[in-house]
Structure formats: C-alpha cells, structure tokens
Length: 187
Image 1 (cartoon, rainbow, N blue to C red):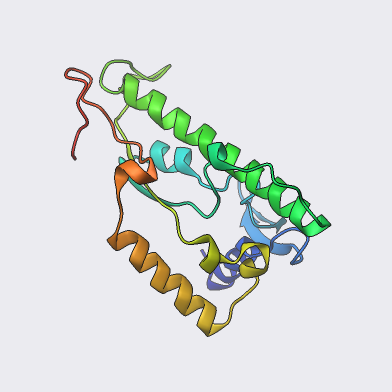
Image 2: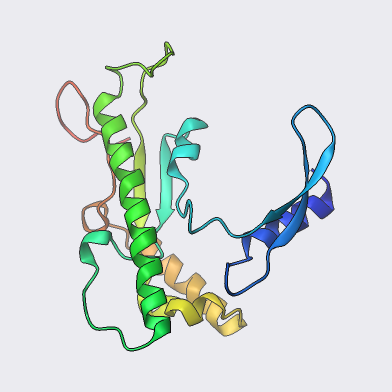
C-alpha cells in the first residue's frame, strides 16, 4: 500500500458521516488498474468487526465497548435532536455488537463438533474479552470530537484502569466452554 493510500485510509476512518466529509481513497480494481473510492468511517455498519477477525483466524479478541450493552439501554426522555441522534446511534451500535457476540457464542457451541459449510474446517472456540470505559470520560457525542491532549490523557488513563481491573463476569466476556465437560476453558 502506498504511504499516501495509508494516510487517506486513516483519514477516511475518521470521516464520521454528518461531522466530517468523505475521503477519496485510491484503490486497486479486481483484474488490475486503480480507481478512486469515496470512503467514510464504517462504525455505523460494522462497529466491532468480530466476524472478520474470527474469519482471519483470531481465537482471542479484546473488545473495547464504547457503547452500552443493548440490555442496559434506558428509555429516559430525550430533550433535543442531538440526544435523539445519540440514542439512535448507541442503540444501533449496541444491537450490532450484541448480534456479533451471539454469533461468537453459537460458534463456541459448535467448536470442534461441527464443520463449516462447504469446508473440512471445524468451528474454532473464540474468547472475547470485553472492556467498558467510563461513560463520563468518553463524553458522549461531544467527546468523539475532543482531540485535546487533556481528553486523550484521560481516555488513556481510564483505559489503563479498566484493563487493570478487568473482570470477565462483570464485563460479560464470551468464554468458550469445553464441549465435553461444559466447563469454561481458561485459555
């Protein structure tokens, strides 16, 4: 990948629709040649890409959850358009993450017992460790746009605290079970 393509791809990953404009990225075409593609942040479509990581062979994933668990979303009144947009985004992302985690859990039940369709390969057990940073430190929608050194220091400090105090039961990590004994596999 050309250095300029990498830079453009990183810029596109920050192009949040409605906040920052799309970025044109030069990409290879199937069969040869190059073309410009208009790209934006893909977080609305695939916020936590667990499935591509698993398909690439990952068996241990550390997922930083920037949105609440879908089961904990409250139905408190919203007072502004921004509040409504924030709730809609949080609900959409939380539902997508819940769906991906459900797929991982199903794959874990099938691990070592069932083969993938059109393949000789068995499903593999996957561990997903979940981390939930402080909502106060994240700062909601305005926090997404806060790139000040102070805010970045707070985010890093909170991330270190959350990682050091990680508890799989509290965080609802996805831990594979040994399909023969039913016990959690500590690996």
